[in-house]
Each structure stands twice: as structure tokens, then as C-alpha cells.
Image (cartoon, rainbow over all chains, first blue to last red; front, side):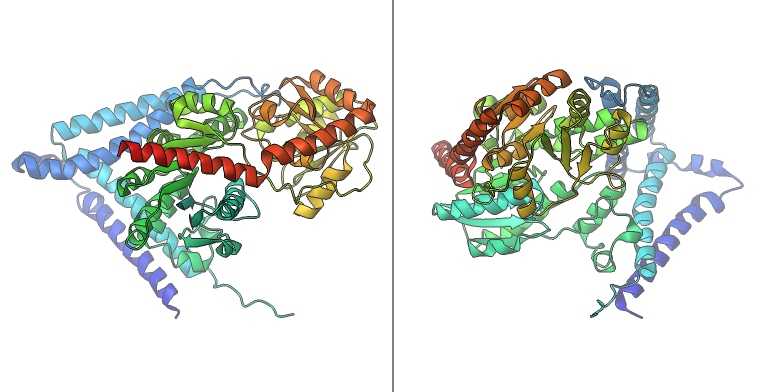
Length: 158
Length: 413
């Protein structure tokens, strides 16, 4: 088997295993009693240790949410003048959706900041899970592409 | 003088940036400047004759679905910058400029162990890592033909629905460019109104902007001597770009006599549908035709044969087709949008207000009716193009900016 394909299989297996493990450990293993996580006491950690973990995680999460807010804000406020004649007849409700985008992202960002402030387990776990899912998803998807893509064909001499 | 030119894409045959790097480096070398070029793919192979080329890796995978990425590129995805590129492109960002700047920053650190530059000239990449490059103690100049805010505005005009608008906003790295451009030692733009545009878009101080007209190949773009067609209009440009104001040209066409035809140098339907839809709407199918992409020789020939070049633009950062047409002694009818009122002198063509199909029609009719005026404007256009827009002129003016920046920088340090 070509070396690239071996790397592809490894990427798929490793990313799937790691993501499966995190889902299993959070949702499957504790499906009977989710309140177990409420008992996780992050106050026992030293302030230094807690913020060393929580600040980078919260910063990434808040940055992404702020980007969402910024996109909504631009859609709401940008003046696109004058409208092109060919699109002026179309109805576009993106401004209404942009209001919701701003509200949702601002609320989630506030919730994360508050969660970190009160040292909630979920304020760290949810962003960590989402970030891991994005990175592992990318690795998985590339691995799948490597496995399923045929190598470049030898050019036909004719 | 030793100069390093940075460009994230270097194809010398298409894409404004690659052509700019190719010609500017060639003419600067003729003026005695030692030029090194650090460039991303597609690479400008022939540059080696007059410049040292440092190739920076990039997979160019934006807008390519993962399953369609060639295996050779897939194998290289797991290196740190390529993986960052991959993830960001999947999130609909256009990270080529960012990652190019970081790769260039680290590559430059190695080069500077054995070389020294008097100046770095960044060609509109404005990536985050261009700012720490200043730490190497070299002044940095950047060329920005026009702020991307104009492109984003035009795209948002065309977008329909929140998803299209979101992907457009994510695509343009305006926050990064705004942050970086304010920290450059000098900004070169290609027209005087561009100074105000940059101030408006990025809060750039006017005194830090220099105007150097873009160059073009006046040797290649010369009239071929082929007979001119009558009543034949020409449009050269991307029909999907709403900034080109094609809809106003089509409206003008409906008011022009039936014998007036329009040739568009771009792909038409089914590859590009916008113009095709408008042609149906205005019932112009029998009077408008598309040529698809043309070689340079074919382009020079078509400029030399058609009666008038028309540009109905709502904004132009330079207006290359107008200059190419003038260089081929073809009179032009252009709007006064953006750089066009500077690029086209009133004795080389007719200038009309943008978004005014009646004025556009009147301008075209004035020229179509008067052959002598067309010939006079054609000759004036050639002279104007050679005097102002030859690459040698652009390089000479750019070199003046370099000298000024270096002098100012050294007086500060």
C-alpha cells in the first residue's frame, strides 16, 4: 500500500477514535446521570491553573462568536448603494436573520464569559469539544480524501 | 539598491498581481536595482533572468472541495501552515495572504543571514506577519491598487440571503489589511482618488500614500493595422463583476441603432450566467457575442479591429482595458468612476457619468458618427498611453518612491 494511503488510514482512524472517545466519555458513559458533571469542582484548582486553561479556550470561543456578531453587524449596517437594477425586485430577509445572529452570538459569548467567571465545567467543556471536533473533523476529512482519491494518472502518450 | 518584492501569487500570464511583479521587477532590474522576488504559486518561472526568485509554498485550495484536491496536494496538507490553510478555507475564509506572510516572514529570517535589503515591496498581500517583518529593520512599501472594501461592497450588492453575505464577509480579510496597511512605511496606489479611497476604507494618512500609475506593455499592445469594423463595440472584463456596470451598457445598447453590435471578451453562458440573463432580459441575443478567454495576440487584434472600447464601470482601480485600447489607437467611451477619469484623457476618449445609460449611449453615438474624431482620439490615445503607462515609466516612478522612503527611514533611525 502506498505510504500516502497509510497516512490517510491513520488520520481517519485516529481522528475518529479520538472524537468517539470524547463523545463516549461525556455522553455515553454518563447518559444515566448528567448531574455528575455539576459535581466537578473547578474551585479546587488554583487560580493560576484554572485561568491557564480557561483563558485560551474562552478566548478562541469568544473570538469565533465575536466574528459571528461582526458578520451580523456588517449585514445590518452596511449601505449598499445604489441597488443594482437586476436584484432590486428580489426580497431579501437577511437583515432580520442578521439581528438573530447578533443576538445569539452576543448571548453565547456573554454566557461563556459568565461561565468562566463562575468556574462552570460546561463553559470549558463545550468550547473544547467544538474546537476538537473542528480540528479532528478536518483531519478525518483529509484522511478520507487521501484514501478515496486515485493518484494522478500516467499521461496518455498518444 | 537591493529590493525584495513579495507577492502571494506570481503567475505572469493572468491575475494583475503576477503581471505587476513580472513587469515591475524586469524594468527595475533595467534601472540597476538588484531585485529578489519572494512569491507564492503559480510561480513566475521566466523571472530568473533578471531576479532571484524565492518560492513560497501554498496549495491554492480555496474553493476546491476536499474530494477534488489532487492527491499530491493532499499528501502535503498535514504540514502546519498547509493545515491552517485547509481548515480556514473550509470555513470560507481566504487565508492565502495571512499564511503567505507568515511563511515569508520565516523564509526571510533565513535569507537575511546572508543578504541585506534596502527595502521590501509587498504587492497587496498585507498579511499579519508583514508587521513583524518591520523588526528586521527594513522599510516596507505596499502596493494597493484599490481597497478591497470596494470589491466586498460589489459582492454584497449581488449576494442574496444571509449565507451568501456571510461567506462574502468572511472571504475579504479587511480587518487584517486595515491593521497592516496603517503600519506600512508607504502605500503606493495607482490613481489620485485612490488616496481618498484608502483613507475612507482603512484610515490611512494621506501623506503616507504615493500615486504611481500602473504600467502596461505598450510594445505588445500596438495597432496591428487590420481594417476597423464599423459600429462594433468592445467590452473587456469580468461579466460577473457588478463593479463593471454591464447592466448600464446593455441598457445603452437597447437605445442604440440595431446595427451596433457588442463583443464581450469573457466567457458567456453556460460558464457565466449573469450577462446571459441580462441579454435575455433586454432581448440583445442577436447583437451581443462572447469571445471567451483570448491570448494576448488575439486581444491586441480585437482591440485593433473594433470601433470603440466601452467601459461602463461603477468603480475601477486602474482600468487596464482602457489603456490597452488607447495603446492600440482605439478610442474609448468610459465612465468617470474611480481611476478612469485620470487614466483616460478627454482627447483620447469620451467620459460619461457612471450609472447613466443615456449618457453612455450619447457618448457612443458621438464617436460612431464621427470617423475623423475617432482617428484623432486613437492617435492621441497611443501617445498618452506610451507617455504615462509604459512599464518603464511605472518602474521609474516606483524607484523614486523607494528612494524617498529609504531616505525618510534612514533619517528616522
